[in-house]
Length: 312
Ligand SMILES: *Cc1c(COP(=O)(O)O)cnc(C)c1O
Image (cartoon, rainbow, N blue to C red; front, side, top):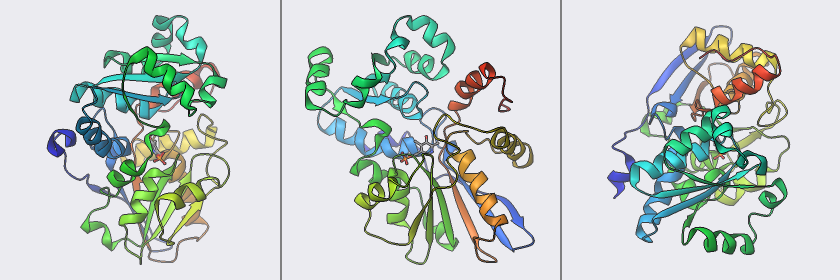
């Protein structure tokens, strides 16, 4: 079972990015984005033990929640197809359901999910906010039958367990480990499996420090810090400077970054190196958590705003 849910994968490679001569700092990136072409990066890690649990409970349907460009929706759809689960995505935005064909023609994430066989339930923003109420789950069960529920963003204790497998023995040589955070599940797993002597920085993709108590739910360790300065206004928000950084990074190091998570984290790491936040000669490992599927969706938004686009 474990093997089937692993899709036959091993750990992802660390790639050298660059030395910063002035400070002696070296930066490596763990290419979790290369784990699987469709169940990318941390989303694969977060799903693994949940999919095993769903099979153990003899569930044949996965139901989850997400925004219209969600990496999690995309990953659940792909994993369901590979492993033979029916999948249902409860998507924020009632208007998207009015003309599904038109919606899919404008939204590569949902188009891909449909191609994997995912069924959608489009709901208004107010219903979406109340999705955790038992009445809503009952209504969904009435409509779709029994299912295994994956929370929005996929974070639960089993997801954190999967993310504890991101680091491997060879990563013990790093002083700092950096990881982007949306719900905080991924960085929690990394904190749990890192050495006491390593320091973990979680880069929040959202405004504020509400992730501190979230992460503390899944770890009792203290060798970590939430970095809150590099959210650029939140999930769907970018600046021209960020787009330029992502394009420049791709050109220089041949590593694509996504605009929601990894691009903002790497921008932050470069800025923090510049501002001497890291001690001299630090060895830094940044986790590439994937998210590349989101680039074309972001580009269609940027195009409408007459903004520079992300190179693909
Ligand atoms: C979902 C996602 C994250 C955030 O993971 P959490 O466990 O929710 O903190 C980070 N990077 C990418 C690319 C993601 O898709």
